[in-house]
Image 1 (cartoon, rainbow, N blue to C red):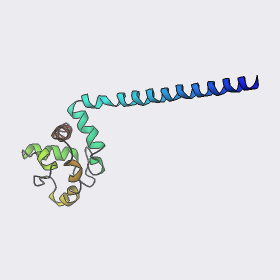
Image 2 (image 1 turned 135 degrees about the vertical axis):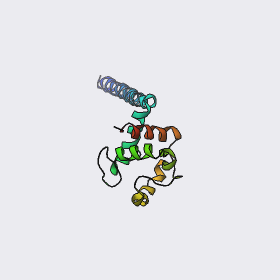
Image 3 (image 1 turned 45 degrees about the horizontal axis):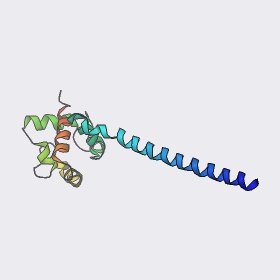
Image 4 (image 1 turned 90 degrees about the horizontal axis):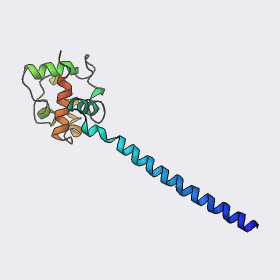
Length: 133
């Protein structure tokens, strides 16, 4: 009788363990699916996400004040007024027009921006231009 109870307990334990494992796989897939909407975001939202996240641009650029680099508003105004191309600059293929004295600092970030797609760089440009007043 003890052997039967022991066997039943082991089987119950093993079957519960499989259910927990299946639940964990479902949760992982659900979390992954929830992360997908960023692909359908507006260009401005994608640009903001890249600017604040992977691009790490906010460490030097704030919306309305100069920290290390010029403010986002200043960048947008200068590029608009001088008909500059932000995407070309972020690819490392254009001279700085906003604050050339900080170009050496900005150059270190080209490794990140040069790996971005044209769509991602255009999204960053759209986000920057959204700060025009």
